[in-house]
Figure 1 (cartoon, rainbow, N blue to C red):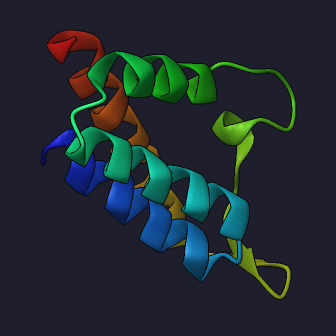
Figure 2: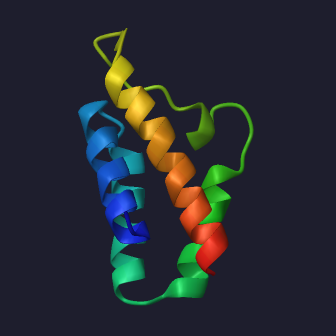
Length: 90
């Protein structure tokens, strides 16, 4: 998957878990990448992966207090793929 598709898939999963702020953030990243704002998007995406407690790295998707196991596994894989894609490409 390319970075744009990865961002959109992450946004879709975030919506499933009612994490609308993260969904909007990754939709914006996808739009920025589509507009070829590479440097700005690289910095922004990489900064999203930084952070301490309560950051995007700690996100666990759930609905009504029940974790979405399959979606969390998929999200973890997508985050790793996006990080690798961004780090390697730019």
